[in-house]
Image: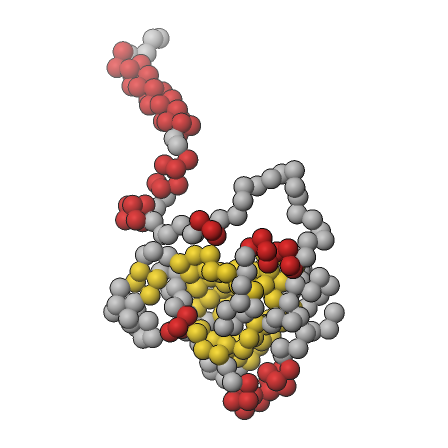
Length: 238
């Protein structure tokens, strides 16, 4: 028994639409795919791209990462320079999108960038100085040895966390540090250098958001961590 003409027409139309959809998806440009996942306002405005000098050279598969790479080589490649809390750092990103004044409560009520990011390196002679920022931040592990991070939380508690590659042994690949948490960090391990990053939201304005810590005052406020606070900048044992 043959199909009715209208049924054959409906089946043929569905098959045509299916083939057209698959062909369209296969030829869709990657840039279109990326922007299609964003809300129209973000697709149009976008967050800012890293500055041209923050971009790394093109990948060269004939030149793999050597096991013997040194801290000095990484400092040179990434153009790391000192700032007020780290000896080797470079800001890589600050969003062009801004949260308008009044868009956030104090201490950000005067407005801030949407987010910011930076590379940083820790060595035995260059620990992360005792400090806090007003902004929430996330530490990321990239290369090298782990770091021990001493956290002095705003509620009076203290904690020691390890950011590094050994996730089986309890290291963290990422460490969330709430805003207003005093902290310091030192490297531990064999290579004697750590390379990582910090991302912050809202974005950091250093002159307004960064505060160096007073070790004596914080030792009195956190008596259970007083010994660590006084000695933590010293390199950890191998």
